[in-house]
Image: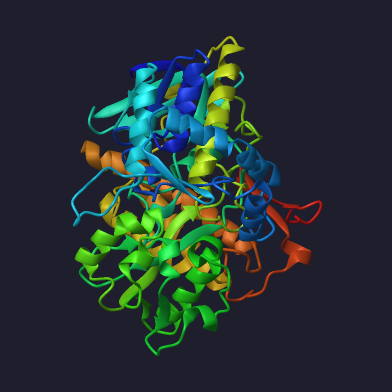
Length: 536
């Protein structure tokens, strides 16, 4: 088996991974980035609206912190949020210096997409990837594309990994001094989502299997307002634009008033309550929900940068300003992930994490715009720290051949695509916006059965199928962690809503669920907050 080497490996080529690669290379490390697609391809960064929140353009630090902590429902890692507030401005200026086309509004730094046809959806995040990948390539960062990392091991001697490439029709190994895990979240685990299809929790399974401690896995955020018209593509509506119109159900009831959603923009500051309200209307009560923009003028709509760019596409593709249109929530962001220190170091020596692969910063609900800010701030820190860690040690990594995954006997009952669809349906129904003890138990049983099927790969000879089954193995591992955590937290808080425990319970649950791997499966512990978080 071929083995590739680098001082620092980066897994994932979105904003966090590319920023980590740039800063590790700036420290003098030999850096390689491994991704499932070409740089930036198949990442949530590319599909994002390109908005970075922070104390910027008239929003002061105290106000930014207060908004972020309020959104997190009492569970944010305050040290991480304070670092974001302190360093966001420097990272924004880095992006500008590296040639990113951008604009800004109060409290947001915004990537500006290239000109495109009016009937094409704007792709804001592509400009972020263009800027960062060009910078990384210009510095000599190497890229290993179209590959799936299946297992990693890290210790004081270095890091070892095995990956599979359908294009190369086989396995290969990787060794080095340190690694930054920046492989994104888990939105693709759900039937309805706005992530790339390949974002299915790889980072969480890889970190867990390597022995890292994870936190807040129950908190999966759903973006409330996506166009849901039959026979038309889904499209996320910018939060500030949504609030210009009226959100009503098919009986004419105002959703904001009915569910006491008062924070504005609701799509930034009340994503949890807003998504839960729409889910209740659509899935539980059986009503349709509409966004009515018929009373909004072009001048009013175009007052903000993101909305202005969307005007032409919404008008031509959806006739969005001529009649009300259906909306529904989508799986959007995983708030949990690997526990790290302030420089991205996990509990495993040499293993670092950044971006959506990490947990804790956002608490029980992320404020809109903070995902990309977290990526560039902690990608920068993790890349620097990983390079310094690798440089300070004599590296003698183990043979990656021993990391090949176990193969179960028998043939799978379906192909990988069918099993993945089944998994997504299970997660949407039992581990999605609305949860219960009975539903979670059913979901866990079904996920474990799919996981058993995913390991039956002995007779699979077609490379594309093998790659998909390996992804499915990682996906089922992440799904099980999410459901296990959701079953343990017996309250409703932020994006975690339990129908059998509909209220928040600070006396019992003001703290974090943490999990590490053990010989018997998983060791769970609850870490209460020493003191309640107070807004500045």
